[in-house]
Amino acid sequence: MIQSFLCITILLLFNALTAGAADERLIIHVEDYHTVDMGQFYTDQYNQYPDFDKHFIRLSYIRHREDVSSFQERQREILLELIEKYDLESLYQARLVIGNTQDFDKTVSSRKSIRQRFPEIESTPQNRSRRDLSVAWSIGNSGQFLVEQIIKEVHPVEDAKLFADANPMKSGQFRIDEQAYEARENFIIEQMLKSDDQVMILICGRGNDFSDNIPQGVELKRIEIPVKE
Image 1 (cartoon, rainbow, N blue to C red):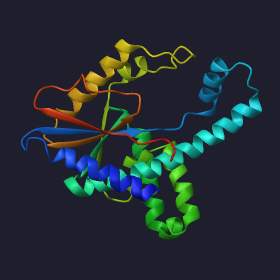
Image 2 (cartoon, rainbow, N blue to C red):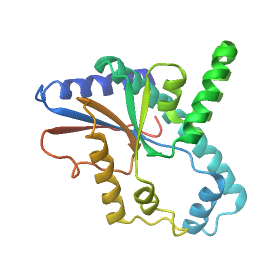
Image 3 (cartoon, rainbow, N blue to C red):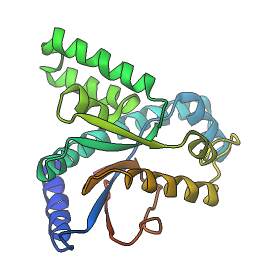
């Protein structure tokens, strides 16, 4: 089921991409879905559903983590197809702040070392499943691709202040600030277009819409990934 979904998604996308102008730059927004920590999840759920007890919210959080793990696996397959098709050596990662990638870099380096010393760590389905959830928690598929040496670089695209301002949970309750979202999205696109890359893959949340942030001469395609099959 998942494999057929991925084949159809990639086929439809590639047909659409080949119809564009050959000299037009292309940004492909691949949807992302990541875990939140238990405290933030509890606060959000309690604010929305004050009658829910802690046990129910805890079970909801377990399902949330499982959903993210499944989503990341589907996203991985799509990203691999795109990297191969366009012969890409790098990806652009939202939620990664320019000038503040130390934790990300340290985790990638640590996992590279572990992978080299213990290659059998991903040799069983059980270990791969643990990796999927771990990836969703920390470095995402882009970081995992660095670990596996599938790509050479992950570009951060976030400004620290704009990223913090656009956080929908900054007040303790889930509220979207449209102006802050727009400022963040504008910065991300401007940052990506500073590169010389003809084709760029942006891994960014499902709640972001860049259709009104794209200048002339640049085409935007979005790959939607359902949370569940």
